Amino acid sequence: MEKRVRENLLWILKEVKKAIKDLDIIKLRDLSNHTLHDASILQEENSIQIAVIVYSLSKIFERKNYQAYKSWQYFYKNLVQYLDNAMRSLEIDNEKDYKKASKSLIQTIDKLDYKLRGYMIKVIEKAKVHKASRLHEHGISVGRTAEILGVSQYELMSYLGGTGIADINLSISMDIKTRIEFARSLFE
Amino acid sequence: MKTLILDTGPIISLVTDNLLWILEELKKKFNVDFIIGKTVRTELVENALKTKRFMFEGMFIDSYLKKKVIKLITTDLNHKLEFYANNIFLAEGQPLQLLHKGEIESLLLCKKLNADALVIDERTTRLLIEDYEKLRQLLEKKLECKIKINKENLDLFLEETKNIKIIRSAELLFIAYENGLFDNYRNSFNKKDLLNGVLWGTKLRGCSISEAIYKARLGHVFDDNQIQQEKDIVLIF
Image (cartoon, rainbow over all chains, first blue to last red):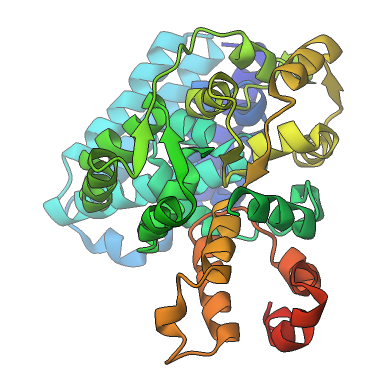
């Protein structure tokens, strides 16, 4: 793992731990955007994954009713453990253990109450599409972002339609009159 | 006969808006060939069939492939175009991997078949072909760093794609509208609302069209003698 990526991930995880303790949802959401730069440039899987995890956490902690589920405490305990293990492995530059820690967080979700697990899986799927849209906003094509985040282009296109990503001057590459005149010439 | 290569996006926009039928009508009326590549088919059909939400859309597109409204043509993906496209812009010394194999395949099909146009809704490929400088500025603004250009790869990419002309699903729908394919709805709805509904539908399903463009300029695409008659449409966007 590149030093810059590792340091960025470590900083994010430390801040995430604090934000979770303080139940600071806005901070969690902001932190999820901190890896977008590396995710766009390096298209590095750990940076992409952490963006999805942290955004998902912001959504999970936002919904207070999740905390009423029986397995919430189990999730919380394992989340803190994941953060500690992930930080430790980054500190000693052990990418293998870092990935193991990330995997254990996903395995924790599998062991939750049926309903809570279902909610969290949905939150993670939505987080992937949201982050894919942000990557596309940064200039990466729809096909490429869908591939990087492992989401379908159907999902991504319908999400993008609801954003204002296309509504900037830098998106315009040809006068609409010229394009429609060309289109007309194809159908004569 | 005109040949149009379709990327994944326009078919997704049309099928999710229940408007894929316009391809069949345009094909009949104007003798146009609509073509997709194998990677695009995989995303549109095979990958959709694996999901619950888009399974039927996958089946629907498959039926259009079976009745040859959309034709599948394969092309060799082992071409340097992907390398050129993904090694044009450099951020912090790192080449930006911008395009996907499906988009590259659509470009290669355009070249192979000497197609009349590429129908593509997504912004990055369009900007790279039509106005790479705007794409550079967009990358610079969003990534908040200096974006350098590898001139050699840019020139090679532009040389390979120089004859490719682009339209979007919005233009296909506009042509369909102009040629009366939505006339069945005119009894119940006025022209302004009809065109408004059709174009907003495709925009909200991911076609990269700017609201501002239509707001400012849509009126000018009509002939002079139509402008008065169609003026209301200008106002709605």
